[in-house]
Image (cartoon, rainbow, N blue to C red; front, top):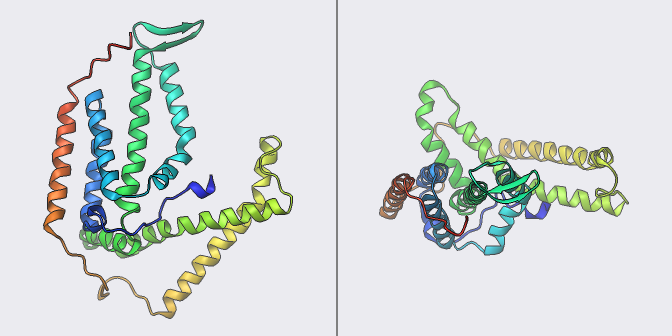
Length: 275
């Protein structure tokens, strides 16, 4: 399970999403999230699902990597489905076994909620994380939040902290996996015993992990100091962000899709087989 966490990883490529200006990608991500959260009918959810599939196809990210990003959420997805299926009431139950009653509305809500969660995860990782390098993400955040400088908000420091945090997630995941393997080699068991015993077994993992994270933070700070790193005003950039015509077309298309999803909320697909 630890190895399946892919948050914060960047996969280089030459696709439309990789080439899109990171500032536009952040705006496109906000529009995409708005579309997913605004979907309220079966037709609009179908449109959101198709939009997510199109974005995945454009990114050309390996299917195994995409499935890994969803795998850690299996428990949440199952719990959400169970809650909606067994606790959402309707008019006429489809299945009635004593106090257990399953309604058509519960099944529909469960499927919609699963689609919403999967689309949120896949869309967010593909649009921003998997197709944007940490350096480009830092520059984009700093540029978009630059108006906040006038009210004395440390925009550059905030952007740098966000990017470093995302960048070190894969490193900490790899470090955690190494610590678990080392502890298992010493005879520590993490899968046996009661809840209290399993919690105690996490102590040999958390202490080395916190120590490693703090040590890496100090090493990074010292490396930046040795290179005379000073963020903020006067800092030059090796790669200058340039907006292309395709960025405006991509943004306009996403805005049109978002408006279309809002309009589709008034339409429903008749589910005659659920009676």
